[in-house]
Each structure stands twice: as C-alpha cells, then as structure tokens.
Image (cartoon, rainbow, N blue to C red; front, top):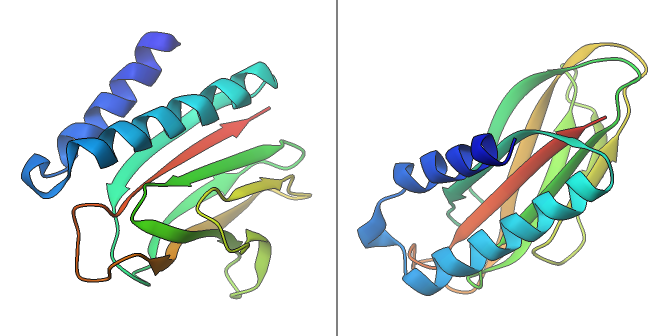
Length: 147
C-alpha cells in the first residue's frame, strides 16, 4: 500500500512542469498530502486516489467517479501557500450539490455516503489565490479514501 501511494504521488509530481513550480510550494503540498493520507489511513480508510496539480484562479478542475451505495467516502484537499481558498463539491447528473466544503480555507474536507450507487462529478475550485497571475505557487492536492 505504501509503495502504491508513493507511486501515485510520484506520478502526480512528474506530470507537473518542474520549472513552473517553486520547490517551497512543492514541499509544502507534499507534506500536506502526506498528513491528509496518514489521517485517513489511521481512521481506517483505504486510499483510492491521490492527485497533485496546478491551479488557476477560479478554474474548476473536475472528474467523474462512480460511488457505491453504503460506502463512506472522504475527500481531503490541500492548497499550497498561493491558494487561500480551495473548495470541493460533489455534484449529481442533475447539477445538484450532494456534498461540499465551501469554507474560506485551503484545507477542504468532505465526507459522503451515497444511498444508491451513482456517478458524481468531483469539483475542485481554487476560489481565492494570493496572486492570480502567478502559477508557480498555486498547487493543490486531493486525497480520496473509502471504507
């Protein structure tokens, strides 16, 4: 499990343009990602995904996943020092938000247990960034777990 997690984080890092990311931002987001992952695993969750990516101001990043009825899912996000407010929401096919964290912070957490198996859109939105023109400090991570 640890090797798989390390591989996922390493692959995410390799997908970033190293020249466009400061070492400090990368180090901070890796620490936050590791802490989020450890908390989730200590709570008995299995890790299904780890994503690290660059983000622009109010540029929504989304992905569709199928969630099984009765399974509890936990989403931990973390923004680097350039992201002041990071939001996560789960949206159904009709556009309804079924779960979300929209607090004004860069450490969103969402827990969701679907009553039926369904496909949902996972939306990550950097709602507020320190400098909307600088791309080098705007990193986020998303860790998804289930049990």
